Length: 182
Image: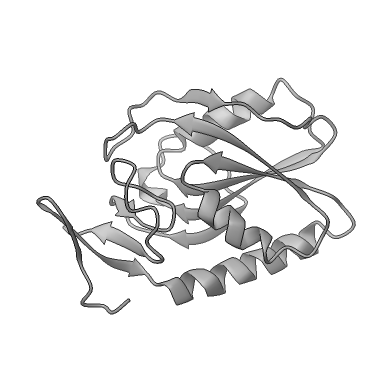
């Protein structure tokens, strides 16, 4: 990805924000930290579909402790560029999370609504611990008091695509992250 690369979708122009190399470096660092923090344990990494699937796949390659993986699917965007303000559970977990160390893996946290929903969802279980890992955080967009334990990158409050994040279910396959040009 060159800094002059742009992606044009209709009248929207997206410009590079985080390169593939920057992503790989930071994800490796996060995997090493998680491996240290969970040494001697067997955490369950729970990816939030669809956006976190690429991040979780690359993150797990950098985890050096025994672990398990599961997914659930939430929806709060539909085909829009902003959250609908309502979270729906579309796919439930397949694993038992009681008495387990749970690591929620998100692609992006903006308002914090999905994380708040996840916290409420897990309040009916009894995990040993629950931590949240997010590749991206839009701190200035947070509307809910949520704790993100591991953050890849803090980014401006703008719409992004690529590396799992979509625009109307497309562009998830981009190797870098692009931001809607102002």
